[in-house]
Length: 424
Image (cartoon, rainbow, N blue to C red):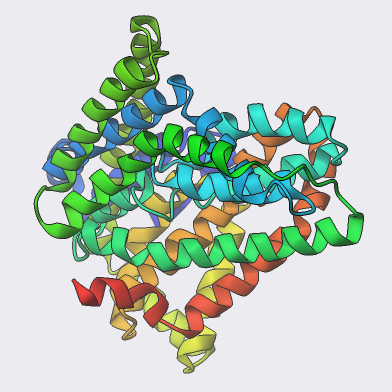
């Protein structure tokens, strides 16, 4: 175990790619366990890490999100949500958050949400008198709802790493936590809009609101296709994701008529690039996960947690704190594939519900998207808003505090994560 830890820390310290870190540390640990005879297992483990039928859904979800983005869906959703919130003070801030909730059912990736919505909403918010750093903060913080409300690439990856929980349960378990996060953000948004006297817009005529709804409706059907098919048992995850991609092409070409062959090609290129990163991470994480299982690290981690406190809630809070710290230096997917094989078996051994802990872990790690110094969504939004990253960090603090309150709520009440899956 010492060999693996030394290699892991050393490679991480010199800035090696996370996938290389996981592969080499697993290789070193395997060699320490059984010498050269263990090395033949490495290739087999890497192949098994990416050979699951479920993983076919990952590129389909990414492709669907890119198609909807290229097809101008963002404009349609913003127009509809603006019709809902236009007359309320700070309306564009609330629209930013509510659009992210709708977009979450399409993308499953936070950075995609940030770019798609931020490029439209941030310049418009700045033009109407909102602080640029605030526009960046609200865009970044609302975009992390994307990987929590299904469909979610992160959840598919989790189900592949830890096969004791189905991706259907993860999808169902993320609905209520995602909506709670949206309500928390809206609460902060309403308060800051009132305190800072942010502008409001003229009310949208009823007929115009109906038109905006009808125009956005075909796009809003996509989450229903995915979730409806999966939760009803009519389709598998992979079938639903494939059908969603076909549907996205049809409405982009036939209904909205702004999805060209060039845009479809660009969507395919982006899908291949992002999928390659995900699959390489999964392949190398399988090596590290195999070593963790063989070495007993999970058992040692469980023992360490119990030595600190016997109270279940305190144990959960300590683990959440650890995940937040990890999130300050690693992005969501690398952090998940590195830490999940160690923590999840340890928490199950301590008696925690696997689904409850899975949802909590996914929520906490996604919050790292706005946690400096990494904070990819916050960094991306700051660049779009053309403000220093430090100012965007300060502007995001009220939203970050609301996220911490959501973490405590989800940890204290497991039913928020497990109730809907229990109905299935």
